Image (spheres, one colour):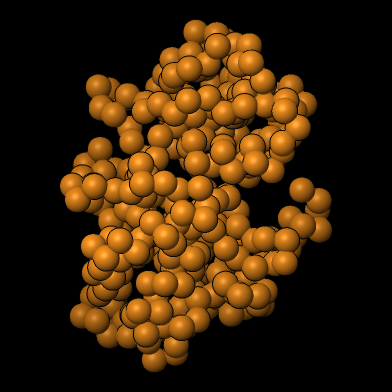
Length: 297
């Protein structure tokens, strides 16, 4: 990724075109009004627009070659907020690790980044019910010379693992015995791929969906994505569940989102929105896959 491209991605972006970052200011400053329904949701309906923070990670949320913000989360945002009477969604590009902080600092009103629901994150923000569930995988050199097949393989093989800054895979790697010195963090998929290409790391650990998308952009036959697996930490399966995130005070907005998301699922309309980005029926959440379940860990 060139420096000009990186500079562009760090600006605010409309879901349909680029907009000034100054447009990001949004939301009420009165928590009591937010809880009672006179806050962010009400304000967004009156204004006809809402501001959403996203990270540059395909296929969850990214800008395409024409400068348009797209991906499973932005497209879902378009669909759900439109049903709530909010026609315009403005996006703000933020490094993944800064999303929740930016949300609570009111730089934007929701996070659209396919962020996994974890107990630690639930302590800081309010997660909606998941729009998808996902398993882990590795991107490795063709032929998988280090024989990486599951969460324990990197530690056993003594390899260096690449993960995204702030993503759950870093914790998975540490809990699976990978030394800190053998874990390299990257701001985005493109830089992680360059790390693999240059030999700085031996594999990239992300969701199968993310890696399949990354591989589709580099069809030189030099790399492959392993079979998916579910990490087990402290005896518990770590099935990733991606969801939108709101401020804890915005219960009205959270409840409205969950109601519309459930309607899409019930009407079999959720998968068609996500399918163009590599999601399949296997990634669709089951009825018991709720935010409360994943917040418990």
